[in-house]
Length: 113
Image (cartoon, rainbow, N blue to C red; front, side, top):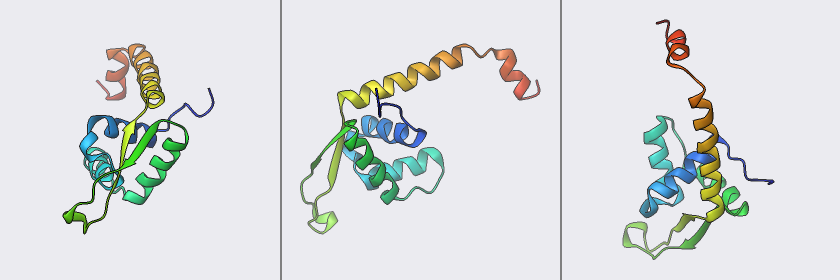
């Protein structure tokens, strides 16, 4: 099915949306991604990824309530869709299949053990 494969960044965005539903907006996702990846991710890049994922039908969004902390502005909150969940499950399954083919000896060879 066209458009169902995920890149690493999109996969991380979907996982964060799923794991942190209260922080599933571009700034919150960028903050969590910075912590997890130890990279400087700006919210505009996350926003672009969320827009692509929404076009693909992998996330849905709605406008949250206005808050005083945001100067009365509302934020767009994202939730994962069934299609997004299926894409995550497919990615996990593919990774698990590959990890299952790797032996402890192979890992030790990489580390020189």
